Length: 165
Image (cartoon, rainbow, N blue to C red; front, side):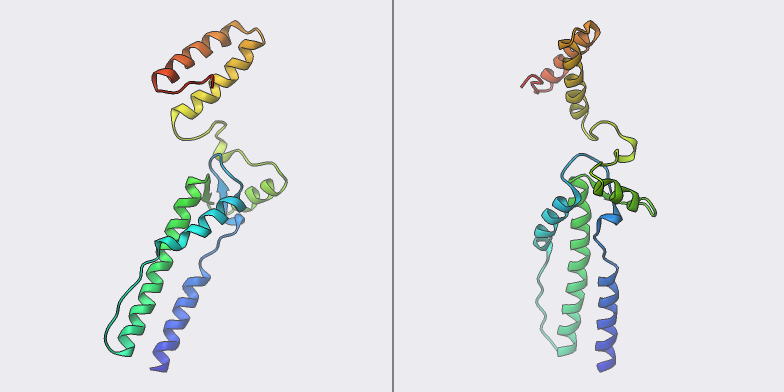
């Protein structure tokens, strides 16, 4: 019995040791809060995915159910952290790219995420940024930018967005 308990403890310790969450493991893929802020927000909420359990039977069965539930909860929390950080603009880095992203963030210069110069996601994000650029150029006297601003403004208003506010 002691050998089984020791093996279960070693297995759960090994699984816990695989879970890392430092900035060197992530790259910025979108616009959002810094890694520390995003990680803290996700960390505070990850316990909400934990599931309880009820086990009736022998002590070994109850212990096994508890260990199984703990492992299941660890997997749920890991998936939640991954998705929460993606929503905040951070993704687990491919091997070898996370350290460069962490160094750039520490230097105060966020890296351009995967070479994207505009906000990823909806076309509305990009259209709003393009409208803002065109508006600045139009105010400076660029006639072509005024035409672009008008076209983008019409598309955005048709989608329910008012770019001038």
